[in-house]
Length: 415
Image 1 (spheres, rainbow, N blue to C red):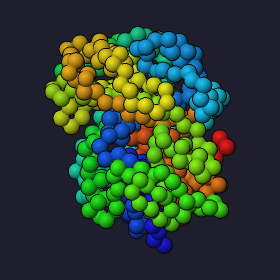
Image 2 (image 1 turned 60 degrees about the vertical axis):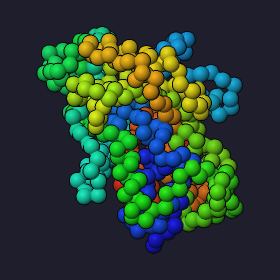
Image 3 (image 1 turned 90 degrees about the vertical axis):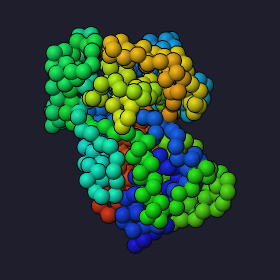
Image 4 (image 1 turned 45 degrees about the vertical axis):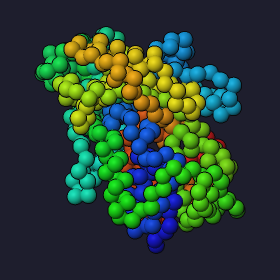
């Protein structure tokens, strides 16, 4: 039966949810407080990443985090603060960072990433879109033997999960990237991954939805919710009142604030990342993560993007010039013929990734609200998991069998 669905949040998760709901015959409205041109969905590395099988809450990350906390240029930074939400999240993060919990998460993360990659390929092969999509894999480039050994351990675990992974010497890396002077000892090569140009896809998807009758409301912020007896009846934005049968919460790092209004607990912290676009020829053709620097490099349509850092310091868009400069310098140290200018660094953008404590997204319904579906908490895999999340949301609302088991993504798992 067709339903009126209101999606709060117009990033990759919200728009993909709108797409699959539209395909199921529902009437859809998408609300976003931005103008659909900014945020993490536009400035990310554009990776589709079955390779990223290890969640953020990995054993050892807390020790590294404490060490990095005192370094203004470190790739991972947690700003300590006396904030109840942050302290609860940090405690849950610590509890999640065990070998047993990570082992349980690995196949879940792999399966949802592969499902999402298949959906991206379906979208690409349809006649609805003309976005750039390349499946060239991902090079995890290392300069030190220790980093290489650590990454190869992950690679071997990925092989056990059925992914194709190779441990490459410097010479083999050179054969894959013959036109760049790479300062690396070697690389672990994941054949499973793909990459895109985010703003290109987001614009195409938004245009398609509008042409097909989806109502897109930009610069509309939800300021109040009419919630009674476990049901949302309407939303009040800064401009109007909006009614619906079903509501989807896909507001990324802001999701927990809306959820609190209706008594739902979804611990999230914003993880800020930065990206620099180099709009000239770099000769880089294969996406790479520079392991020691934690910098992601993506050849996109008309430019190369250098992205990095995970800065957990609350919701803010303050640009840390030191971290931007660190991304540029690290990139130049791996690609010896690369120079990122100060002007390019000044044009850097940032986005906030919604991080759950255990590295798994929240996808599904809470027991406390009967007509709200939540899809958030994707951390660094938001882009990768956009179509999968949207498809699962549409299956829940259409009351059909879901393509994946939703238990690992339970919205109430920390309640």
